[in-house]
Length: 111
Image (cartoon, rainbow, N blue to C red; front, side, top):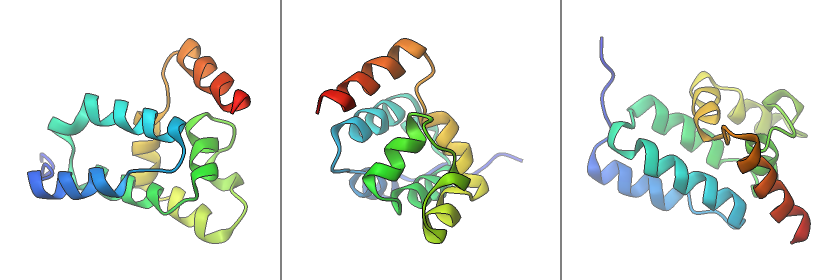
């Protein structure tokens, strides 16, 4: 069974919803869209929407692997970040290389 791909209109709405206040989050999200926008599924869009319910700082902590969803401070954040879809997308959003992670982390510490 193949999963339904996200339509063009839904993709446009999702990209708009994913605009964040922290540059570091925006950079990682933009990289995600560059890699996956042509193959983004409805369930991945749900996971991304779940993650967008988080504060910028909680999202960045997850993306940089400083925290896992169960370590977030409040129940709503834990619930949003702990859905199957959110965890699936989180793995796709996180930087793969340690050099990319270090570059983003050092930028965060200098801001």
